[in-house]
Length: 222
Length: 313
Image (cartoon, rainbow over all chains, first blue to last red; front, side):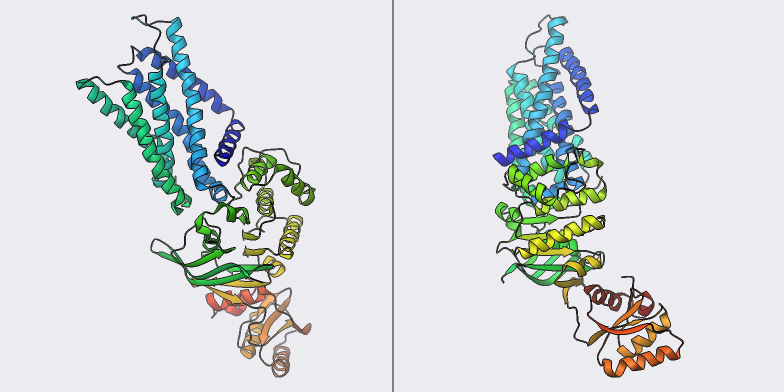
């Protein structure tokens, strides 16, 4: 566990000491997406869950690109593999960072949406319900899937620039399936969250296998 | 002494490209082994295999008695590695990076700081507080070396460690290698800088045709001699004709191995003088690895045009 936390610390330091402009971009993203979710929210049955999930895709894959792809491109992953940290700890530490950071940005976004609906209620006049466990669970499930999916696909994809698309496809696939089934028989949003999280577990296992193989150090071509 | 690094029957290929075949190597404790070879010969692949980054297709590898591919963290902590990239995170400064590496190796920061104070005080990187991404290439290589020696491991793998180092930084690196060697560590140094191999290595091997050929300072063909004269293809041809091998031109003299110096050297001198060559000096000498390597390169790559290309492996 201490090795996982060490990896998390390393990613955190590298992030906070990085380019400051990225914070401005996240601020804009949080505000803009908060408006979208607030506008789409009508009790959690229509478009708002999709905005929640896709926001997770955007944020999680952004962090993943740095911690998984850039680390391989810069060559520092090879050194990490030889300096006494287990490969599992490297993977889980990086995933933990992506999940925590995406959760933090997502919380800010949902809080922003909540505030917007508090002060500018929609036509139905129901400001409550955005910052609920349903959206939080959905966002957490999607975030876990995106972190695990990014870890796996950053190794197996011939071009890691496709990371955003493949994660979008995965989340989109689950949400489309959920919407289709819900059309026939309404399902609680927790089911979608659970499916996303379950897929996350599957991709974590697959990513662990990739990290144990020598494919993890094959050259990255953009 | 026991073999700290032991390799036998090692083969490695990437897809259809075979890089190493049936390679064997042993390096003992307290030994520095120089690894040379042309570009693409497989030096980096061999080091990455030994460092546990790559997995061998066939053969037995043991570093400190363990298979490096076993991903044994305890083994990694006893290994110092410098690969192609320095591995430092650019946004962090030197000490922040070192703190993370020290923690990864299970070394308390106080001990790591003592190591920095004792061995790196006075270097370019020691007091630097700027992000590593602003470091020069030489400084980044010093960072990588500093990380490799942290905790004084029992085994070292250096892939082109002298690249970008200035004279002072190289001397510092050489002193650390000698200290590690004297402490009983096994060191594998891969480099195109033959002076570094001469300077550091007690043994050397050349990767060629996917295999490792052990080099010795004498090849067994005879004694090494040098003739001080200008660089001229005609003189090289004369020496080659009498010695049976192409000479190497280095430091304003021709160096070559000769089987029967008592009979051959006077003949060479008289032939050279007869062709108008001004011979400045004639002396026996101990061969450096660099000379042996240069000749091996030349024997392999351009046997017909060898004499004129002596000094440029």
